[in-house]
Image 1 (spheres, rainbow over the protein chains, first blue to last red):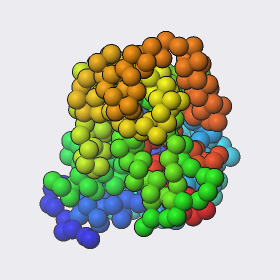
Image 2: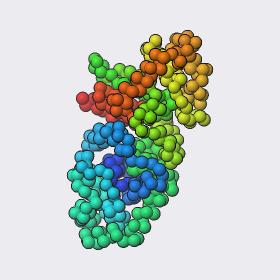
Image 3: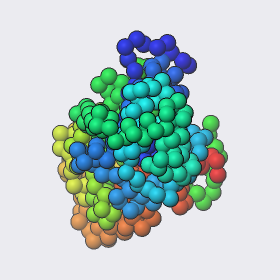
Image 4: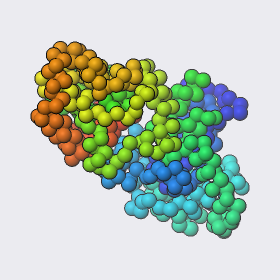
Length: 204
Length: 204
């Protein structure tokens, strides 16, 4: 069921560790890339910035939707066979973890997916605070980066600017939520569209 | 892959002919029922009433989401192999078709799915106005009901009351959008959750 990689194409995966559906998608991206025959490029962006720019809002704003989301997330986690624990603090402002991942992207790009998964798991499976120094230090460790360097990078202007630029790029290309995947110009929103993404790549 | 029907259980399918994702789900309900081993009970409700009651809003309110929806609907239609043509008038106030379907539900329940599909196809595949007398007359025809009777029923108080009651019931049970499916207390929102619905029934 695997396809040979097509040169020059990839799946761009825009995600925010504060987004539960980003977590669910993240657990599947390796498999999705293999099925589509495309490499996956992980792209940390800031979902809060996307909401502000587009006028979209988090689904939990509607109380009935927030209640449903817990069942829905639980079902997806069971479907994928991945751990999920609804965090005791939600939502969180994800500026710090997303900037940390931008720094990993710049300095140790090969470790970006691993570092992102470390933060995703801490928040969505272990109910830890992904904005805390302790959790961010774990991301540094798995990325093989000095902890002090990663924590300092969070306050560095180029890192702030890069996160903002990626967020603005996603919005300019049509994104309004997370996760958002692109294959060239074709945009897919939500872990629930990963199968349509694979189908679309295979048909093209 | 079929399962024997479980007595006393069914899939309740709350839908509005004005909702594109309700249309997509409607095209799949026979197959979904067969795979889940459950009969499907079609339940016309008023999505506008659900939005008013829950504070939810139609996705097309966010311009970026509206643009994406056209691609998304097209992909689902291709995935299911069903016709889809984005209507030239959208959204429409669906009081008339939904009330007409309530009348069919009351007087010719065996024909409800057929009449609903006639209205869905008129709007989502033929770009016709599902609120027009001409299209409603087609629903009467396929349901084997006199056209005049169906058109008169739209203004009848018991029909108005029944549509309102069904809408309020759905909201009271947790619905905030369309389509919404229930299997007992378990609620599923969107055509994109039909596979999780089948999975959930099979696991129970």
